[in-house]
Length: 192
Figure (spheres, rainbow, N blue to C red):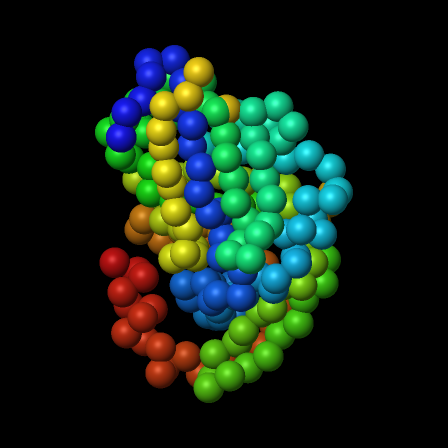
């Protein structure tokens, strides 16, 4: 990887649609989530988003229409940004960017239970932001990718799709008691 001192192009898939997240936790326990194909495309028709570092609203790295491009294709939500933030460039040089995440408010979703695990299918959303993650955060979806190279970059609670390296984010959603004992090994692994 070769980067210039004053800028870096960062691109990759923020999320692969139709794939399950890692187990997430809300006040009712664990669940997995799937962003349905077309959900990002619909969201991108509404408003502009920013690219943040680790969901930190004070760390804006890009703005859609300026140095940030977002689109949904057959794989998922793809992002490309020309970043001039010195800390982000340094992290890219050190290969300390580990993935992408996004913040959203669900507009249309459905829940089902399969083999004792709740599954949430997000069909439409208000996409608030995308974030590049450093080593302090873990993407909630395994299918994210970060590539870097040279260049001359509501009132409802926003849900973030990252996990702290040591903790799983707690999200507020619905009430239902489910037996998660078949998933204890996965849950224990996430807590480490």
